[in-house]
Amino acid sequence: MATHLITGAGSGIGAVVARRLHERGDDLVLLARDAGRAKELAQAHPGARTLVGDLGTPDRLSWAFSHQTLPERLDSLLHIAGIVDLGRIGDLTPKTWQAQLNVNLVSPAELTRLLLPQLRVSQGTVIFVNSGAGLNAHAEWGAYAASKHGLKALADSLRQEERANGVRVTSVYPGRTASPMQAKVHQQEGKEYDASKWIDPESVATTILMALDLPRDAEVNDLTVRPGR
Image (cartoon, rainbow, N blue to C red; front, side, top):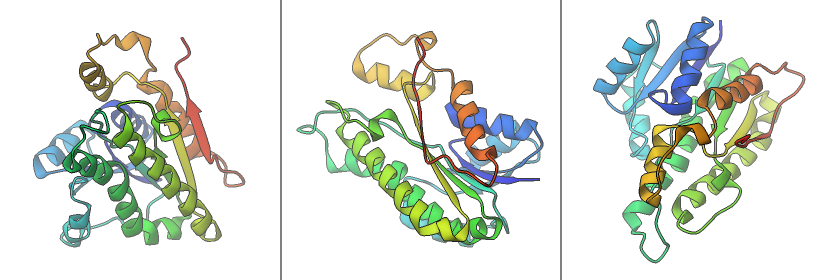
C-alpha cells in the first residue's frame, strides 16, 4: 500500500487528489497549517495521518517536524498548496512577495529536503503542482509567476540530482481551474467568477494520478493541462 504526503489537501485540486487516493485505499499523510486544520482533514479522510506545519514559515518546518512522527517511507510527496496575490510590480510590497515565495517555493524546497531520505528508500515520486504562470508571466502576476518559475527550477534541478537515487520528479502546469483560489483571483481581477468555464479539479487530479501511477520504466517530467472549452 502506497503512502503519500499531500499539501493543500483542504480544498481545490489537493482535496480531490486526497479523496481519490483515500478511496482506493492508499495511506495519506496530510499537512495542515495548525492543529484545528489537522482535525478537519482527519475527519474528512478517516484513517489518514496529519502533520502540522505552516508553509508560511518555512524556517520553522524542521522544528515543527522534530516534535512529530514522520512516516518511515514515502511513495510520493505531492506539493499542491499555493497562494496568489495579484498586483503591479510598482505596488507590491516585500511582505506580499515574501508570502508567496514562502508558500509557493521555499516551503516546497524545505519539505522536499526534509523528506528526501524517505523518498529515496522507496524510490518515490515528487509532484509539484505548478501553474501556467510558471511558464509565462503576465501583467499583475509578477510575484506569483516568479514563485512558480522558481518552482520549475526547483523541480528541474531536483530531477537531475535525484535520478541516480531512483526518485522521479514531475511538474504539472494547470491552466485556470475551478477552485477557491480561482474565485479569489477573479475577485482581485474584478471579474465575475463562473466555475463552469474552467478546468474541473477532477481533471487535474486525473493527470496527477497518471504521473504518479506510471510504471517505473518511465517518468513524466512536465505536464501541461489547459481548459478544453
